[in-house]
Image 1 (cartoon, rainbow over the protein chains, first blue to last red):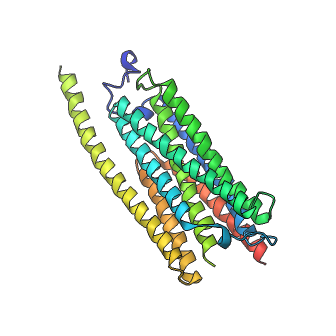
Image 2 (cartoon, one colour):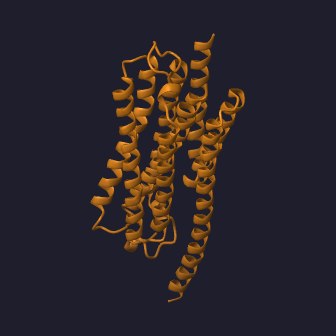
Image 3 (spheres, rainbow over the protein chains, first blue to last red):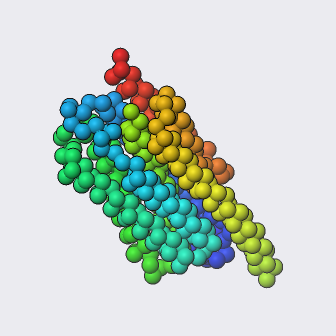
Length: 207
Length: 106
């Protein structure tokens, strides 16, 4: 790409997120990070799987978990994954407004997911007195699911700052990679959730 | 002038290609929702444990494959290094889970 329109998307038919060296490096760096995240969550999952029967006389997973709320949360997060795909689609078509709109919907779905999770934890603590300190199962559960929730919080703050910071800038080869790395990170959060709802909730319901 | 028409041609080709891709991604999404529903229904139906657990794990693996290959574009060109990173992570994940669960069992 020649110098005079290096930050202009109009004459570019390439993926704007990977048209510059900086964009390519960000992309690679994010995947390095995700490889590490996989290992991090692996140790949480392994700990949880080992300790999930160690309830120390406290509530068991069969007593605690309800299918309805987890199903709603899964649908919310899955849908937010699709809306960010739409946002990236509009980014590649150089449509900034529609990209912001779809990322806005993604953020709202993420907030809804988070609200459900906070409600869920509050419900366990108040109704069942099931806390981080109740049992080894409690510690393993809150560490794994809570850390995923923490990733959602971090992702939401990342997305909202991106959207606010670039609201008046429009789309350029400078900020397109930033949006793209966020979208990949957000999909990864969904990947982790797929295993959480299967391994923690669904397997926990099967007696 | 000719430059511009060329770029327009490329752009319109790219637009069609992207639309096609978007369609595949919506199909992927519908499949993922369907898989989620099946997983929840199988658990709600209270079938035997030996069937349910491997089955829902298999559904999860397929769903995650959809996420990686379609939503995160791992099926596209230029994702070789990235695949090795994520498969490295998955390999360590599998070994960690295996180690922890077997140590506790035996």
